[in-house]
Length: 335
Length: 110
Image (cartoon, rainbow over the protein chains, first blue to last red):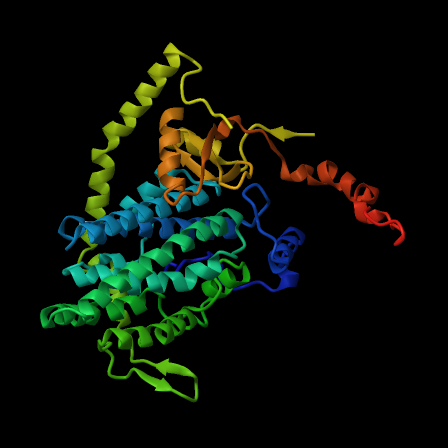
């Protein structure tokens, strides 16, 4: 998932008997794995939390197009360029599925975009890092999409129907994203010394920010506990991070690269890899807007939106004129 | 019985006013002769752009052979509160299912 530190607005998770009858019934449906649909009754905090989470997820997909878009004109071959174009187009699509899902909760598309531009809504910290070399495009697919997949796969079974359904589509496409990234890195790993150096240099920069994507340890967080109770989050941040590390280390070994963590070691007793301390100061600084690219990313989004305003207005004006000329104009739907 | 002249997403009528481009629901018929199925929604100023956007957003991987786009505001949906009166009566009519009838073994092919 690209959502980090989503607040639920609760101070503590209520015991069942503290819930109103309506809330109890709602919780019982979730516990029975019944999907909640847009017009069903839901607690206000559930609705608001989902809007925060889904819109943050959507914004991440949209802002996430920027670091990769940077390399479309610089891709080394026509095939890589076509693949990257398709991937970036997918990210735009993912953003649209998610905006639509959030809109079913009663928030408008424009309002969400306003919240992004004004800084009230966040996007994932990871997209505030620059893509300096071609190997970075591989890292985004392998590590960034790989980390996102850890949380997105279980979200296909989350309690909110439209979100779960959007996630099914996204997961299908995300697997292509991760594989094309790894494929690109394999090519570099079999290349020249300079290419292997580029590969190592890129993983040195991306490894820690990718681990930060899961968010700070939250085993005791009331927000995480509440979100898990609502089945809109299925594991703690540390659980997701651990799974990701365990899965990724052998993949790094295959590429013949060193992950930049001297403390990374297999722990037979735990059956997991141990890993070194994460620099959470850096994470919080990036969230506060002090990452390498925060300002650039946000202004690129803002400019695209404002400079495209005339297109949206023109399309509306055209539609109004066409409708006035011929009320039944438009494409005929037919089976 | 109340019917709501608004799509499943319900609250989107307000959202429309803000974002101006109306909301459309997208239905796609996949291969293998299945019927059109709801796949999601999008915003577009008119039917033509709704169709083009639906193609780009929902059929990048051969998901369909046919697309329907319907203005969300034109969909009439049953209200969740009516679930009881609407659907409960069917629960008591078990005799509508073939499994209600026990057939003799000797009479095969039934």
